[in-house]
Amino acid sequence: MMTLGRIAANLFWMSRYVERAENMARLLEVGYRMSLTERGEDESSDHLLSMMRAAEVDDIFATKHDVVDVSTVAHFMLFDIDNPSSVRSCLDAARTNAKSVRTAITTDMWESLNSTWIEFSQIHPRQVLGNRLPSFLQWIKQNANQFRGALLGTLMRTDGFAFAQAGGFIERADNTARILDVKYYVLLPQSSEVGGDVDIQQWTMILRAASAHRAYRHLYRDRYRAWNIADFLIFRKEMPRSLAFCVTSVAAMLGMLEQLYGEPSSCHDEAIKMAQRLTTSDMDKVFAEGLHEYLTAFIASNNGLTDAISDSYNFY
Picture (cartoon, rainbow, N blue to C red):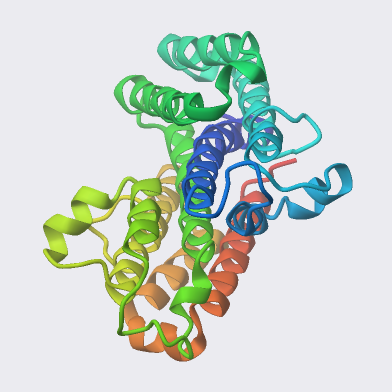
């Protein structure tokens, strides 16, 4: 088994940063497509601002820019090195972590990540403006999928695999919560839209951002309803980007580490508790609390789980 500490942390955060790069592309796609429903693409967009608030990068953006339009926000979310969650920053951090544990990952994993970084570095921001933006965001998602495919298909099922997978699923859960939070105001209990007509076009965008559009239609076979969409992305374990699926997967990886090391860990207990809270809750309770409040609490718990893993396995 690998030595705990720095190597474990590198593998954990390598996967998190690859997942985050993809997730930033997904959030930007939601904000971009929603902004097209407003008066003009070049005007200030409330949808883009909501997207950045969900990603918790709006304060950084505000220190640098006065206008919230598509081109400015796209550059900030994709290329700005001052934004620690930009795709460039995430890919750079993922590659740095991977380089530090080059002997602990496979050649396929390294080549996938390194080639993505090289190709991304050669792209000029002007090349992906306007109607070319969606295809570039798709390229980012495809390359993240390629890296995950290399991880799943070539990495031995040892503790390194468990740390890498745990990091990826924690980041994915965070992103799903944030995607839902982009349009939380439509789902608030006091909203007149609950139980009535919702903006079908925008809800389609939310589902597409989570790669859940076709799966949702297969499962529910009806129109887009706020209640069902939230249930699908929070509680349905069949959906690989749902909160329930991600937390259950993290708990499984931490359980694998317990078996490999032969000793219990407090972070595994915390993951089990989070999974149980999702199992025993339902949409009635979520709406009674308020979706925004529920998602905010989940993100905080997810961050707490990261801290617990770091403490249990001596990340530094």
